Amino acid sequence: MKAQKDPENKEGKLLNQFVDFGKKRVLEVGCGEGRLTWKYASASALTIGIDPDHSALRIARVDSPYNLHEHVHFAGASANNTPFSKETFDIAVLAWSL
Amino acid sequence: MVHALNEIHRILKPGGTLIDLRPLEDSWAVEVVDSTGWQTIGRLKDQEIGLADDEAANQAMKAAEANRWFSQSKNTEFPFFYYWDTPSDMKDFIETEWDIYEKIDDALFKKTAAAWASANADARVRVRVKMWVAVWKKT
Image 1 (tube, rainbow over the protein chains, first blue to last red):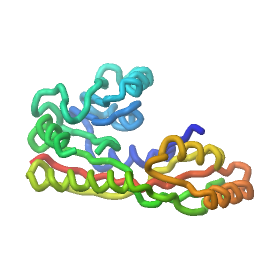
Image 2: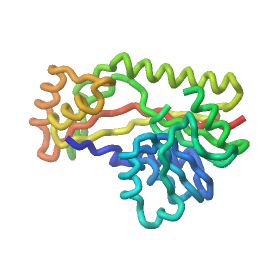
Image 3: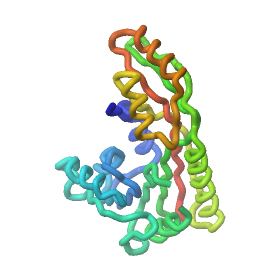
């Protein structure tokens, strides 16, 4: 029953064409298991993914590529009340979450 | 949703970028694909809750724009495909993962199964999801 999602990587290609993630501080809201995160995070200076689903976050942490461990982090939170100071991020991604 | 957009406005730097990436309900097409090409078999049925979610998201972005938190710089639509090895896998997924958003009726399932069975041995089934991406700048 398992679905293969976007094997052509249309989503990742379009996202990277639309926005320059290079050296940016990125907040991804609704990151889930990190499926989208891995498509842009390597270019960023820092990426933080938040999601209220702790089970999904556990998978995201386990799946985190070794070369991204230093600058990709995940936290249990929702967009309504984030634990971040004002004017912290260059980019916010609403990932299938609005 | 509007509260979340206000919070995102708060944590973004001046001139920061908000990316709104999400699927749009659009009676997504069911297709059979093999090494020779693909064919559209029919369309799923959008459910009320999915249509209402789209409308609520659009209204939230309109409110954020009216509040002068963000202004849109560009947008586009693009296809996002979900693939399954068999029509039964697809049906099971739709009924368990998308049950409140999309329905596949028996006639479409049977038509898909017939088209898949008569296609090449490498045939798979897929759903063509309409995706929306918009880039907004913090104002």
